[in-house]
Length: 293
Image (tube, rainbow, N blue to C red):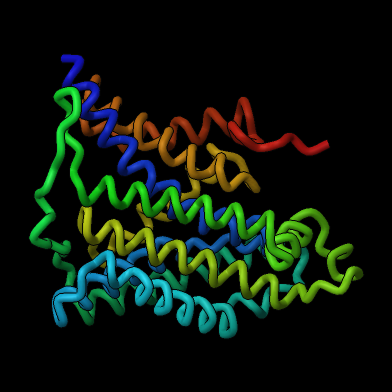
């Protein structure tokens, strides 16, 4: 019993790290720009397919292809920002959220249908020679691929935190979050900051998608599910908290896993929505967020 519970909790932590990585990208974009990009899950899907096709066509190892997935999503992020989201920079915050939500929803439908046309609705995953490799500790099995994904996600979060706190550009991003008008008066190029945050969020989604492709599976319709999980994690961890968002993803993953173990797999998806509502009601700033004022 205890061994099975420990095994489920390990699986929860491993999938939760990917929830957190995906949500950090969405949280970064929303925190800086106030763009509610509900096509974020489709960006994750594109990253997964980029890694999958590099492996399927040219046998490029999925972990080696991560830089290619990042570059692909960086380019896609620039294109989507320039063509769609960049037009709403000067709107009031409420209008910005509403309009970007509608634009993101339309973009998600377009990307999902294009993926269906090009790659069919088949579920795909990357199977390498080491895909089934595991190591055991105290009777608990640790899948090597998923543990590697956890390590990569953790390293990226640490790197992002160092970038935001130690570099001039990162400080410009944080200043824009605090007060974009004051940041403008201090000589910060808001348009460039918005573009940078958007493409960084897209790149993080691409990495998460590539890791999902190698550890789990991908399909054209996966985007909405990952967008919803990212929104839940973003609210759970707290807006503006990168570390909190990542930890929130792990909390969601562990909670889902524990729910499947004690109750039923049927309720795994429901528990995230229940957490979302409870946090909104009792702690709207999130578990790790700071209350305004």
